[in-house]
Image 1 (cartoon, rainbow, N blue to C red):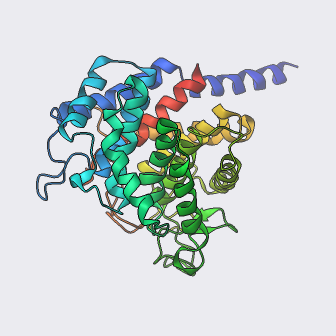
Image 2 (spheres, rainbow, N blue to C red; image 1 turned 180 degrees about the vertical axis):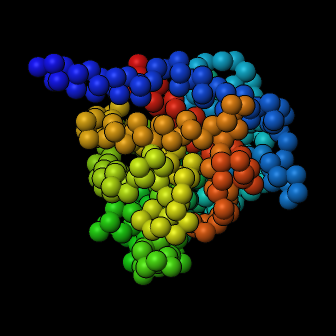
Length: 370
């Protein structure tokens, strides 16, 4: 009896050591965000001083997606002031003021504009980016998303535009584009239903492999899809005809992610391969967000997925320096081999999207902890 009591006490102690509170999670999110806002005190500055990328580039837009998520849990006026200065500077328009673009990366900022509209109800926040969506629909081109990152860069914006306007033409177009990418792009489609994971783009369709003979599934690329599915479903009713279709793909991915998580809580840059094996923050942050989202929504079994969630949180937490700098971030690229080596102290070429992804995950985790 005494041994049983000690065993139970030991198990409870281990659980307590891993337990988090909302305040602890917010402290870490604030620390990382404050580091960024202090570094980039003027949100209108070019993202890259060498090539002069405008600050509504997709990388910075993903950051603001995370900042809005943080604001939901930690409503500080300085967050909205920072965002509004950025949006006003760009006239709430697309990247490089290209209203006729077919490039999903140029549209990513539109998600932020729509979300800002949902907060203040001022239609000027989404009217300019709406022109881009309308131009794309008018061209009826459903085969533009030839790389899986585009699903996150564009698709949630279409769902938000349907909510903002009440017009289903936006989500209808997005779903046609998604299905083409999923089932047709590259000849076979980019989703491998057998393994529940995605090839990165039209050039990576099977039998694209790493040097060890394993299939090449890029962590952050799959993370983009996983994140996008959650964000689109946030703007659909569970009774919507598209919801169950997206939920099926989401659950398929969630199941595939469990056995390939590393013991330290990260996922490899190449998900099922040991090529470039090691901690990687940006993909892990997205899988963390998506798994927490699923448990919060009641579509994933908490008992099954909580161990992976806790391990992933510990991994993300271990990546953040005392000053808020985030380590283990793979820089920009299109495959596991890009921007190598990945290191705890190495600064990536863009330091914004990884923070945005972390803020989304941390904010979703706060909802769970409440």
